[in-house]
Image (tube, rainbow, N blue to C red):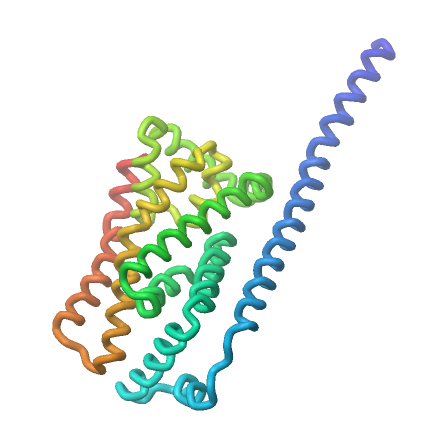
Length: 268
């Protein structure tokens, strides 16, 4: 074998060895950037909360007490409602910032904030805020995965990515409807849809539209739950209508799970 052929083979081997090394270095760099972004977001959230207007001593006594009955719940609710009224924009900034932070970094908690929105801001405003915050956070998560997380996602979820890619290819002609279906049903966790969609060439426009519309049904349920809980605290009693609604929420939450296996078979 000639020296030139040997040297070419050596060069090819070196290039093949460099590729995984370069990819590993890129993943490590991107991981560090993600950590910095997360810490920066947490710092911003801390500053928002730290600069909140302080409570009066009387408000602290009423708020930080274990509720022993309907009267205590009404007192706590009155303090919260008065604080929201007096410091509306501070509460709004904190709520939106925390919601987007949790959604962007796929941290559990947005469901509880969705419920809280009904009690804090009312039905219409709570619904609009939750829809905008959820969609914004999901799009930021999509963007971070596209720019920084591709290698990490492929490394950690390679098998699930292949399965999801197969289903997307089958439904590529009706992609928007399939994405809506995924948002409404529990076949795939929302966080996985957020991080995998950019890697599997789902357009951001369709992703955002499907997220905003697809999350609406559960957003309505969550916000309405917050409204009902707020009413319970104000009135201090439970009527038949409230009980029926809460049972209905529980049934709707479980309904997709009952049909999960059938839905999975249908889309296999």
